Image (cartoon, rainbow, N blue to C red; front, top):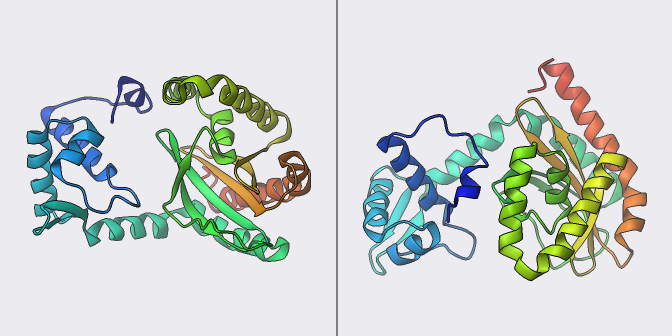
Length: 267
């Protein structure tokens, strides 16, 4: 659901009725997540905060434009194949991903670890690429397009360390309201992670049992990306940070240098 705080995360130069309809249509598309493949008007209204009549009208428009499909038997909607085509166009057109992917794969194979690249989307991080080469068998599988919580992960905390001040303030407000009583402990962990990024260039976190990830940001002229290295282990985040931190920073620097070499403006 959109809120004034989430609106504050992006600059909106002007709002006409057409713009509002477009924004609301995008909110309907955003409501679909793994595990929520079929959604009816009521569920879409609940997830977006829009009136059911508005949802019904916009969903029909999205069906007509080929971005949603109607399941006639259940009167629910699913994302249409055109959405996958858009995602493929994004991946194939990403210069950062084109530069980073070979270096990520080489590092994953050399160290036998998992290497990921993510970007922020509102209060979550979205994987652009995930190369899985774990030392131990893990039950968790991460794929491109998967979302993870910003406040719990090394990816999200590394992003918060370098996010523009206004965006960071808005995000921290959203996260505080969502986490309630958990927030004081989480805020302390986030602040410590941000301090680590500023002093050492990376931070570590373990938000799932026996999985530790180390993350470092890549700031370009027009976007912020975050790389991470992760593995299944019983070692502490501090130990893994010492072990993998130098390799992670070297990866980020290699990608940054190659981007600068290809385009002096960065991207």
